[in-house]
Amino acid sequence: MSKVDEFNQYREKLNEIILLKGNKITKRFFNLDTNTYQDGALTSKTKELLGLVASLVLRCNDCINYHILQCHKLGVTEAEFYETFNVGLIVGGSIVIPHLRRAVEILEELVQQE
Image (cartoon, rainbow, N blue to C red; front, side, top):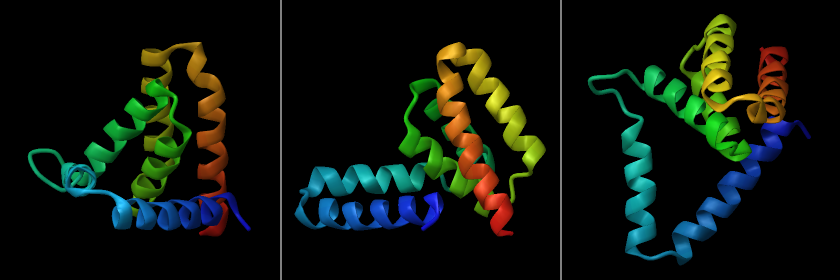
């Protein structure tokens, strides 16, 4: 199973349990998260790229994977990904490098699936 498929299945399964067993606050937070990335003054693509930078800086691999998948769906080019990675790296510093490697691993898998 690919890392992308593994991530998607894990995320879907656990989100379903969380939303089933969670309360109104949990559901509202998930709703806010979803709606934050909709088109507004900024495009969804721009917001997902911002989310990717924040995730790199915060060193959250699940979030990095999620935003890479969303960006890919929105047509982010390889050049745009690498410029975004550079922003995350310059803001977060060298501690971001291991997470950048994982990001590139997921991106490479997506590119190979095309």
